[in-house]
Image (cartoon, rainbow, N blue to C red; front, top):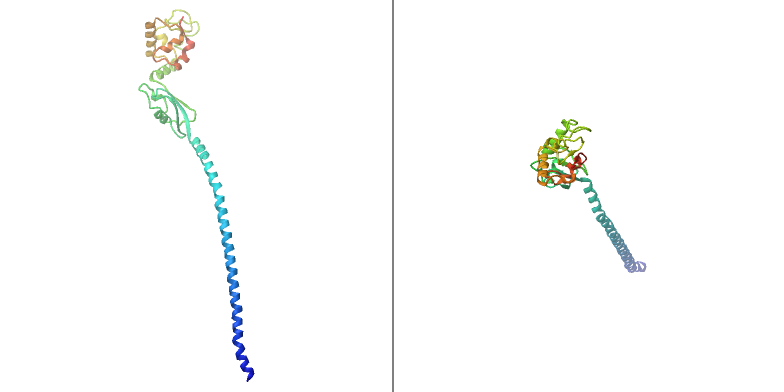
Length: 232
């Protein structure tokens, strides 16, 4: 009877002790979880900052290389061509690499009224550094005439110059008639008449270079005939 009473008294005390131990374990576990959570958050924040810092150099590098790549791409898609002759604005023009000759002519303001457009293949493709020369109808006519009668109208060595009356392979600008003048490369009937008019107005030519003062005679034409003319 005494044993049973002691057992009843000690049983609740054991329960209290066990509950206290269990509560301490719970507190320790919770504290450990909180510590690990703090460490995890700190580690995650550090990685995020490192990733953010690592993005800036790549962005700056891309920004620096982008203009170079753009300039290189542009140089590969454009060309420069020289448009001269019977156009409104002769000059050098920048065009797309797949452009055609008619686009270069348009860039130069179009053709002059006296241009011989039929002598140029306006559908042809362009290439970098190409020169497009548009002749006048008079230049084209003179070129065709020269091709048709090459060797027949040019006086050979020892032949008589129809304008000068002397035996000479060169044509004298001060004595030649229209027929003799039109035998020169690039000199048609209208230019020959202009030479005769200039000669009459100024009393003759003092030097072969003076022919450049005649309307319609340009450097290109002079370069072709300078070795075949004289003023003696």
